Image (cartoon, one colour):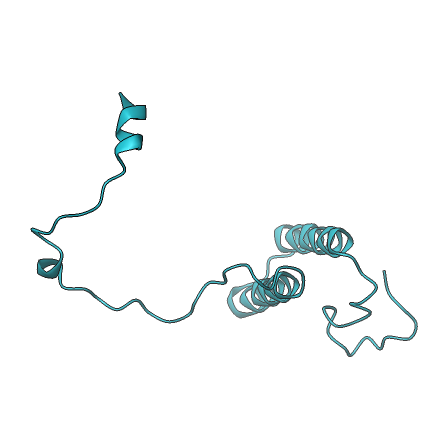
Length: 104
């Protein structure tokens, strides 16, 4: 679904985004993903070109999710802080007794 008013130089995620509904956008992305997968299988793309294509597909998916599901949690690029195990050993932890009854 392209629009003659939207230049191709604009990212696909911003072209006529107010007119494209989420199901249509996800269908388009899935179709593009299938085409890309076919190309990657048929035409061997070594290292960097393959990474660029995969990165671009990932970027579009992230943009689509940000557009249609802004309140959903997003993965973080930061590293988790390492914790000291001793700080958590020997402590009393809350349990879910109702789950224990289900297991039995």
